[in-house]
Amino acid sequence: MALHSFSILLLPLFFHFILTSAASRSSDIAGGVRIWPLPALVTHGGQRRLCVANTKDFRLNTDGSNFTDASGILKEGFLRLLDVVRVGHVVDANLSRLDSSALLLGIHIIVSSPSEELQYGVDESYRLSVPAPAPAPGKPAYAYLQARTVYGALHGLQTFSQLCSFNFESRAIEVRSVPWNIIDQPRFSYRGLLIDTSRHYQPLPVIKKVIDSMAYAKLNVLHWHIVDTQSFPLEIPSFPNLWLGAYSKQERYTTADAEEIVRYAQRRGVSVLAEVDIPGHALSWGVGYPALWPSKDCKQPLDVSNEFTFKVIDGILSDFSKIFKYRFVHLGGDEVDTTCWRSTPHIRNWVRKKGMNESDAHKYFVLRAQNIALSHGYELVNWEETFNDFGSELSRKTVVHNWLGIGVAPKVVAAGLRCIVSNQDSWYLDHIDPSWEKFYLNEPLKNITDSKQQKLVIGGEVCMWGESVDASNIEQTIWPRAAAAAERLWTPYDNLAKDTNQVFARLAHFRCLLNQRGIEAAPVSGLGRSAPWGPGSCFVQ
Ligand SMILES: *[C@@H]1O[C@H](CO)[C@@H](O)[C@H](O)[C@H]1NC(C)=O
Ligand SMILES: *[C@@H]1O[C@H](CO)[C@@H](O)[C@H](O)[C@H]1NC(C)=O
Ligand SMILES: *[C@@H]1O[C@H](CO)[C@@H](O)[C@H](O)[C@H]1NC(C)=O
Ligand SMILES: *[C@@H]1O[C@H](CO)[C@@H](O)[C@H](O)[C@H]1NC(C)=O
Image (cartoon, rainbow, N blue to C red):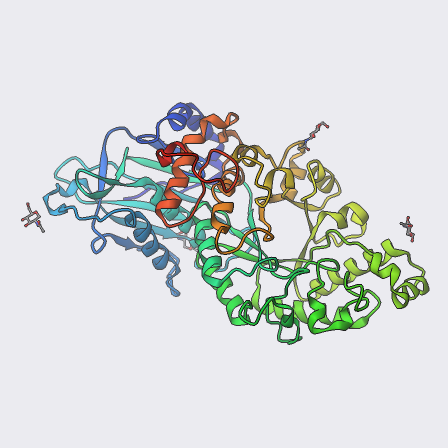
């Protein structure tokens, strides 16, 4: 089966088609489009369906692809797809009774780039089609998936998995409403989720499950807030006493664990953005190296007057650069309270001798840390306080991470810097009050009209701060609200619902799909992490 080559330039021409099919999309769960996040362009047929061949017969065909799949990343993605579409029921249909023209025998995937490198800005577009049954007697059909990179192909497989459903009469997996034609690509390159392993340790399998669920929603950056005031769980070979700041010996990550998280995420199209939050939020560093504390009575921010502080930061970022290959490293920089610098005589004297005041010293710290990160080949992310306090002096390679409130992104991009949007009133998952509607409606480009400035908003991130989540409740606090943000960050603006009533049913369907796949996503209605309000179908709660 041959399709015309895919050009992104054609995309805008197609938008009005999908808008005209919006009515069926919003109301009809069974037969209509229920993909989450909604693709850029979808068309589909009516009553016809194809039966998905049994596992042992359902094939991956990569003929004609430039991508050789030497590491098996695509094959693994394909096998995972088979698992998730079959996990819900025992598929015991006798397909040999079926006319072969009603059978979908596999997916033909063509990837044009031979590279497996996952990096910021990687092409994630794909084009997926599932044909109608051939006029009998026909050849068994293949779905056709075309992508520039293997990561676009993985997104296409996720979309395909959402087209599949179990037929309770035939006991087979089928794709209804064929033929399908989908052309898709993300609106933003950075679609993040923060996890915080300092406030509570998260075991490796928990982090991996979070990564699995991110891939279902096409989120693509795991922002790993590894260490903070409360604990330092990660091994740092350059300074081996740092992880003495862990809660316990058991609650630690070896460098091999960290590499495994990066590898696991990469195989699913998810990059890992590592963070050290300095100079505040770093008390735990001094458990292993007390010289990093201003004094034993006043323990943060890190001692700005001590050269050793910057040696440790250099060691950490040097070790990071061997594990975390994403273009950016996050240097934190939020909530810096310099009282300890003022109250500690040797620091107060140092600040004065340098002809600085406390805010100068804070700036000196942030800019010096930026230079260290740059020397290890990273571009930088800093929380917005650094921009609010001395934005014009930050490296031009800084991405400003908004969190305090709305209205920051317009200022950041007007200053010519890049921005990630995470305003806490809408995109903080640890805040239980904001509803999924609030998550859905938070628009990163609000009040930014200049198209050059719009491009500087590289995306957004929902933040799962760890004070009140551990392995027992992290999934239900992340989902389903993170999915609402995921659609905001993936789907073209014109396809997004202005009225959230139009998307409730589709989001509820996605939440039930997560549950079916073993993810403990909470009910959609109600606040974050709420229990079901009473007996009832998953699809209405
Ligand atoms: C499946 O159906 C075919 C054709 O009707 C029949 O020959 C075969 O025995 C069936 N197999 C099973 C396992 O029921
Ligand atoms: C394979 O790569 C070549 C060279 O970059 C390119 O011309 C061709 O279109 C690619 N093939 C596919 C199927 O994308
Ligand atoms: C600190 O000093 C700088 C000049 O070096 C000045 O611009 C700034 O206002 C001072 N900040 C405070 C809080 O005094
Ligand atoms: C957009 O601008 C309006 C008018 O200045 C302001 O009231 C509103 O809070 C802004 N919204 C965001 C999200 O920045």
